[in-house]
Image 1: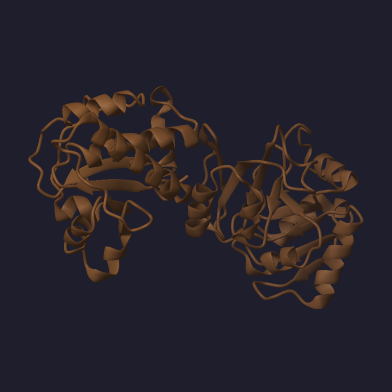
Image 2: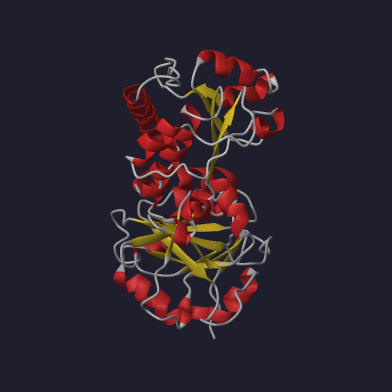
Length: 365
């Protein structure tokens, strides 16, 4: 077997010459082995049928399987619409790194590697490979350097010996640091599924993707319970989930409400129950909870109904963390308490809460 040339690069930035060699090989439908922090990958140009067919034959891989687009930076996420805030939060924590996200959508140039309207993408944590990817004027896919069903290879020499003349070039970035394939998460409307277990646990992915959101008013029987119910319903619709499929918790979301002067265990007020029922939101199981420092600290986002609520909540947190407490109304206006008023007051209150949550929710899911 003829061994392909091996170019040692370690974790340094690639030379202009290497950039040209890799680019020219991929441009002409050839395969190049590149290092990543997980395992070595076989790279092909994503929009060249001949290169992709060569990759399929080289690996002995079923042709119906999709390939993963490898990107130099998280900015590639902006080409996808589905659940973009969740994907951004995951990328913010795990990219560059061992997480592949399969997202709904097919950006231009990736039609050949997507499957059924879904595209996989990953930003690898190997500086040299990211630099090579950044210099390519076309999208590149990588597939683990192994024959289908075998263990992935972790060293450049092993890749050269295994695949020989099927490869145009092997870029030697040293042994793969993590030595295990990336986790693969399908994320989209109605989907939060680990397709392949890797170094990241499902609960860690959920905790990162979702948010713990709280609403606070005075007694936790009118405004904040209505906000909690409306927020749950809005999130369920945006996420495409229902309680029988794990609900919003499947995506890592928790929603609660608190009262700064609340007694524990009180139900929602009768008119709050009626108004929410008219929106197909059931508050029958709601029981009031007091806003203790421990409960407030546990939340990622806290929305207060009035400026006085906001000030009281901020006094419970260290100054650097108090910024997570905002007024629910994005315009900075108080939402008045409907307690003691007629049903019309509750209707107006619920409508203001719903409009505010719709606007705030663009940053949630």
